[in-house]
Image 1: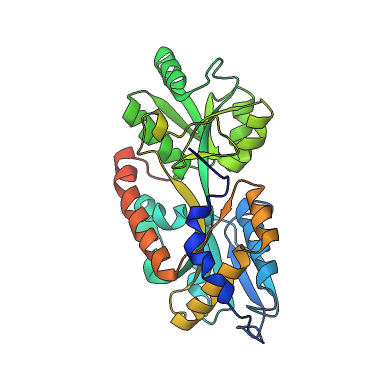
Image 2: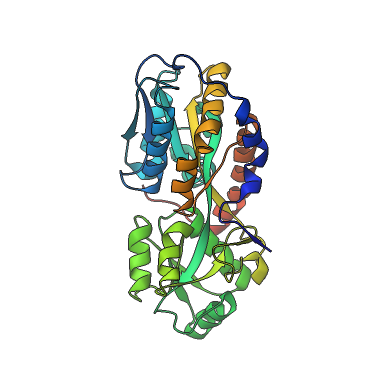
Length: 327
């Protein structure tokens, strides 16, 4: 059974509650607010922040600007959030990995504890990853064939957009579950990882699905497995990892909104409500869905519970991998 590219079930309950929202007569915050993004302008985090800024301008604050605090693979933006005043003039949008995986990677070197130093507000978007092969894996059209090729070659390399990311550890779990040698090659972002897969320097890549789809549809790469729970309507011929015998390789990544930990509960609730209204706006929804992102929303309590569950999930995986970042 396929699902729409936008997995509506994730949103139905919270967004059905949103129509009752009434816009405030004046913005919640009376001066310019900033959305912190830990990644460069032009990327998907930055795009999401800019779409949100447009929707929140005039209702959250008179002006809402995006501030790109780039460095330390997203950690500098989180550290900036922690130092900010908890008055609503600063909030953060960050991928899940910085919150659920980094505590296991960096341990005492991490300068924040997510649920101590940050107030979860809501997820904003959610998306799966895809495993794609290129010219470096000739004739491979499914996961079993890729694993057979890895056995024949006594190992196969796969690219990811970053060391310590969900795609990185998805490959680690696949290698362990299948008993084949898969060598991780980290890149600085999706684009160079995909470029080397297109060029045949790397046999495969596990990457953000939206970045893979144009190459798959153009016949330049072949997506052979998805980390989503079910097939997607836009890619009905592409099975999930679970369908191919690997149910543990089911994972969605999200971008979530956070306020400083000391922000009043009422402020968290107000931002949560306005985010619900923002993500159901047709223009924002369509813009994100065109990039294979689904808009998402939940209560702050449910978001917090999700963070706890995903943090617990990744702990043993990171530990078993033996990977430790240098920076």
